[in-house]
Image 1 (spheres, helix red, strand yellow):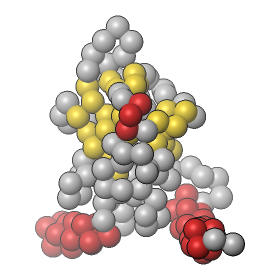
Image 2 (cartoon, helix red, strand yellow; image 1 turned 180 degrees about the vertical axis):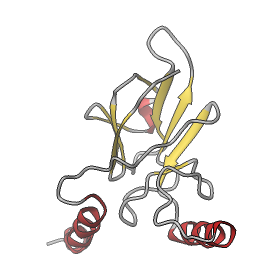
Image 3 (cartoon, helix red, strand yellow; image 1 turned 180 degrees about the horizontal axis):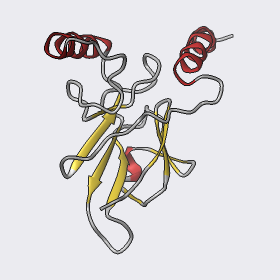
Length: 151
């Protein structure tokens, strides 16, 4: 076996455990919601350090800590998709508001390393911005979500 295979096989069990811990056996993440507050939104996984800092500040100002930063702006990430460590980078994908005859929004992968999909089709940075329509099924890292365009 190559070093790559050994590293991957060592990572998968921990990753699977983290996914089951977060989503349960049903795989549902019904509490994940975010809003685009500007013309673009960077989706990615906030660093553990950023999540801890955010949680600490939140605890001081609101008197209760949050369990997860999912869907929130944390550090350089406009929308933290959370998931297992290293499931994606801090800048994995971007949604932009760009009205056209096809759609109001577009989705792009920010690099070729992260797993980003739209309706089951993997996209990479060189794919460019693809039309993002109401009820399209997208994924960024370990997070799968349905895009709702209520604009």
